[in-house]
Every structure is written in C-alpha cells, then in structure tokens.
Image (cartoon, rainbow, N blue to C red; front, side, top):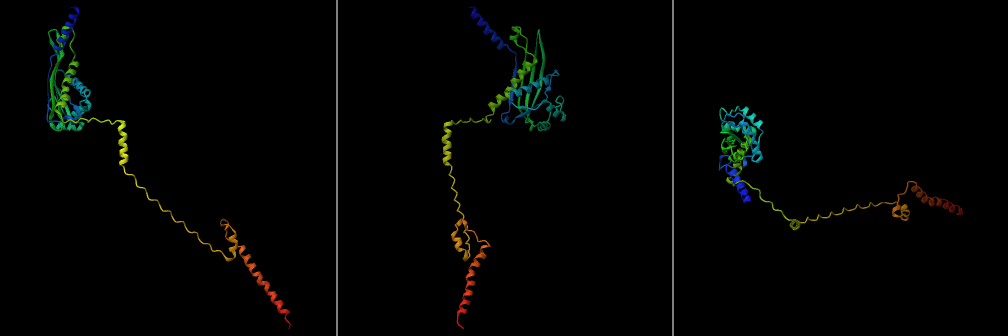
Length: 299
C-alpha cells in the first residue's frame, strides 16, 4: 500500500502543478490575403509604454529581438541603427503615432520589408496578501513599410503567479522569465499561421539520388548519341620543284661522266684554258710539215 500511496501523491502533485499554473490569455490575427514569405528583414521599433514602468519597454524589446532571431523568423536590423533613424525622422511614439509616410521613409532607410512594433499595456509587481509576482501584458504587430497595413498582430498577458509553486513553497517567476514566456507564445503564432494560412509557400522538391550503377548506362547512351566527328580531308602533297638542268660544255662531258652524282663539281677557271691549249697544239705542228714538203719539190 505504501508504494501505491507514493504513486498517488506523485500523480496528484503533477496534476496540481500543471492545472494550477499562472493564468494567461492570448489572441492573434493574421491577414489571409497577404503572403508573408516576401518579408525577410524587419526592424524592431521602440515599444510604446502605457505603464509607469520606465525600463519595461526597452527590456521587453531586447528580449523580442532575441526571440525573433532564435526562432529564425526574420533578420533583424541592429537596435542602434533603428533608434538613429527614428531620431532623424523626429519620431516620438509617446506623443504621436507614425503616419504611413514616416513608416515608408524609415523602411527605405533601413532596407526592411516590415516594422515590428509593440506596446506595453501592463507591467509591474502585483501584491496579493503575502504573495507578490510580476505581470506583463503586451501587444505586438507587424506593419508593412510600403502601405502601413498591419500584416499580423497578437496580444496576451502572462503572470508569475502559480498555485502549485505556492503549495510547495516555491517562489514565483521573475520579470525576465515572464516576459520571455509571453513573447515566445506570441511570436509562435506567426510561424504556425504562416504554415496553415499560406499554402502558396514554395517548398523545395526532393532531390532524386541516382545509384552509381545506373549512371554508367546513361553515360554510354549519351556517348553513342553524340555524332562522330567527320574525318578531315588529307592535304595533297605539294609537288617537288623540278631539278634545274645543268648545261655542261662539250669538253667537260667526259670528266663529268666519270664522276659520281655526288661528286659532280663545276670545272674551275684554271682547267678551262688547259683544254684549249691541248686542242690548238696539233694545228701548230702541221705548219712545219707543209713547209718541208715544199722544200722537197724539185725546182
């Protein structure tokens, strides 16, 4: 029985902790005819303060920037650049709201598609009897910089009070935990509503992986389908230049025939006169013979 009692009290304690938590409410709106997929970068404007808590707007604004980045909703411009743009436009949200012209100029200056604006409706420590706990009420809205139209808006409140913690003697949550919990719940409605209300969002098609064995036949088919390059016509050989005919003098024909084709050399200038002298010798010898015959004739 002791074991069953322990299980019973354990289940009872879990039920009390889950059912007696802090009271919170929330309401959200998303324009159906608007596609938010074009919104890639936003600027978080200074929050309006409708309470007496002086530092609540900046504290909640810093947590909101962290949550937008951590949830991967949008890229966010640095807070210092946003404050500088608001000062140049002389915008004071505590005195008057921004008109559409100012919103458009700030959007162009910061190169964003939308402004994330917010207002602190309730913030502070609530005292009830001996118990004290923080409470926060917040409104967030996403505004188009070109038209000033509200794309999305959500409101909610969160409390650090918990009956289960009081029963077990535990303290309440601090202001940071309450702010973080409320912002997570509000910003979660953007991603959930975008998935449900925007069926036109483009999803990446699955990539088919072709096995390595099937790649080879495809490569072979591609190689077969490619036409074979035509053979280039062979270049005709250039005709060899004809050898020039050499004219050889008559007296030198015999000497040229004795030489081999590789030893054919043109006669030098000294050899040519020698041949002429040999040819003229018989002519000179014939002269005295004629004279002797004349002497022998009788007178």
